[in-house]
Image (cartoon, rainbow, N blue to C red; front, side):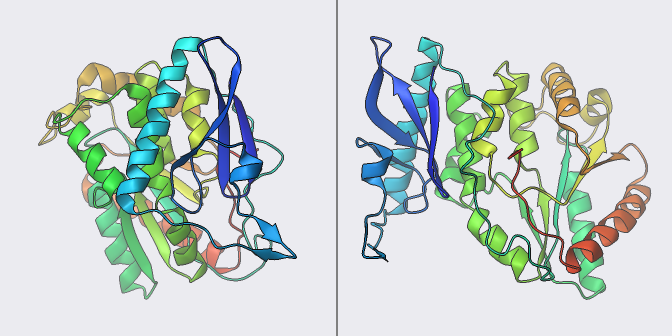
Length: 313
């Protein structure tokens, strides 16, 4: 079995089994705060920043190319470890990710996520919500995952366009890495009072990968500690109806049978933050439903609702 070692607020480690089935002394640092994604041949205690007399030594920063290379190495090693029956426990260590001023009453922006099957209308409704909140005078931005402008995002884009092939575990970790790339900026934006409308988030990553047959708890593990959405708007449409919409089938996952499996995976991910929206209605009617729900969420967060971490409990 592999073991998660949460040695710092910003990093999670997993000890990998060797060919003999015994644990090696090396760990893979999946999500560090310095290079983003790196590997270490030392135990976590030795690879952390050294502290002497209360003074923390400066971190060594990696170039984007080095970060991608190191992350790819970690991803391949994690993927390979499945041959030895490695499983990822879902529960997180008691050393959970700390968010500064988590219990303060400072006003902030809302984290709003739109989820659903391909061609359900997320992108169109994200744009409409952006315009609506801007007209009301709110600070708001529209984001989309995967973010194809980053180095990791470009690798994902190539995969989705069928220009490259990657192991299912590896591409799942790349999708997760793409979200972790933006986590710090996301928190900063929210604390500054900017509402973020996100087209796809961790739920998509888990739903699509588990639809391929990957263990759902394994899929959740690298997402633990990302910011939890204040509101998840699920645009509900049947795979058959979605397939009738323009442009369907242009990317890797737009296949009817696969989308049916994704829909089933989504059902297991729903929680109290989710609101189901009938996406088969005319686009104006869908927008009307979204407006009231989103505005209430923005107002609640503006009163000081604390941020929380995804799937930490």
